[in-house]
Image (cartoon, rainbow, N blue to C red; front, side, top):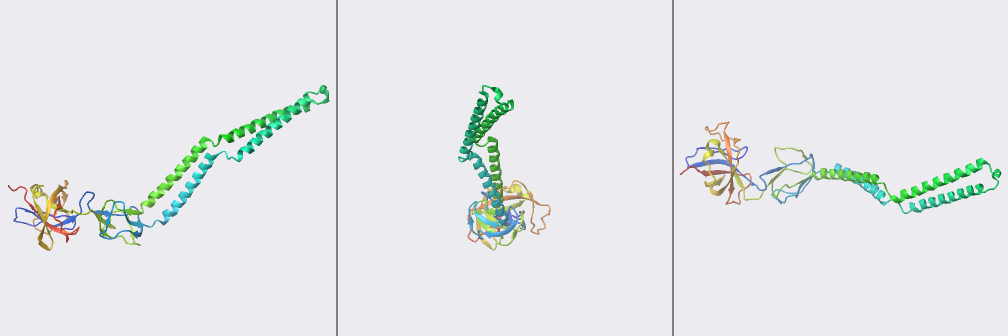
Length: 328
């Protein structure tokens, strides 16, 4: 009978005369929900300026973990906010039209135009009422008639200017100003989003299992061999056991299973079946047994530790024995 192990770098599989499957070097891990082990990484690259947590600290979802250098984006957001303030001021100016101080000026221009028209009409009536038309030239009479026409046009212009002033800003100008404000707000929101990405927060509630983020170091993006921060859930913890594909049919959910601590074989931990990982994967570690092949594939079985031990830690290796589920 053979069985195998839990995680990359482990070794497993050894022969056993017991009526069951024996697996060495299985890894203790944190369970879902909300997550298994999470290798927290930076979304954007940058120098680490602040680390807000310590190893073994309990964190809540959304809590600050570490921050990157944000000086450039803070300068950019200051510029964007000034542009937004200018656009909002322009919109307020258009919305407040007409200015109360401009109305009396326009009304005075209308009054002056009316007075000029009245004077021009009076001058025309004066020459037109002369009994002897030979006393005034035709050119003078024509000039005074045109003066009335010009005065009427000036009055219409002044009245139209007053009406335009009282109407306030043109709706199209207001619409353009509102779009400028919306564009400026979107620019601020975009920089704020970029700024927020420089602060890494806890994706779930959990415990800081490993902290490699240090102030002054450069945080790259993408998967790292040594993650900046390793986050896991609180207990009860799980054990991930790999069973060789030729023995996978023998594992039953109801079959009892126990784990033993490395270095203390007298201490047994009761295990409860959680689930099968439905996809059979290539074996990632070999124990050196002659029965093993490099093309061996394994079924991963997840068990929950129902009898926790204070000396147990996440990432620790344990040996697991699963009773043969095919036995009568």
